[in-house]
Amino acid sequence: MVIPLHLNGKKKTATAMTSINSTEISDRRVSPWWRALAIFLLLVLLIGWAAHSSLMTQLQAQIQHAQARLVEVPQIRQVALLQDNQQKPAMLATYNPKDGALLLQRLNDVKEGREDSMQVWAIAGDAAPRSLGVIESKYKTLQMPVKEADLQGVTELAVSAENKGGVPAGTGPSLPWLFKGWLVVKSI
Image (cartoon, rainbow, N blue to C red; front, side):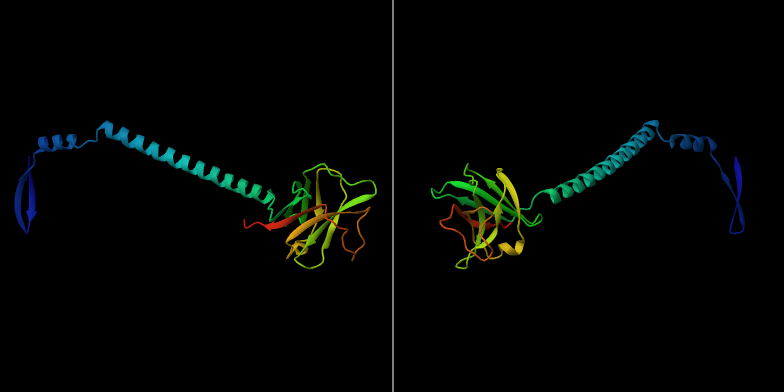
């Protein structure tokens, strides 16, 4: 087949090879294997993206759950192990500023009598002991409301045996101490 061409005002002819061109066109078709591979890789990418999105959502939910549980966990800042006269553990005292309470846990079987009360005292160096309150429960554990300011500068906690209801305000404890121990401030 002869095709007329016009180049720069001159007429020229070109011969087209239709049989060769049609063979080249048929060789340039995409193999079905490449199409299958492309579809497979696209599916892998979509599944990977969906898995990533799902895992990120789950991770965020777990982080929020852990943060909520962390708020619920007591944040104990101060600890004291009160010992008796034989240096045996008698009472564990922990302070959680979030609750504003001193948690007292009895570690021995010493209990006050019918006409007696145990009173908790804060000792700050050479200053007179300050009463934190009377232990009114006969249970192994109890919470005593205490303000954080009441424990500022306190180095020791002690327990004394007093008449029922404790000593009047402004009066010091009856000595000797039943239990006494250092108040330790936790760094974490």
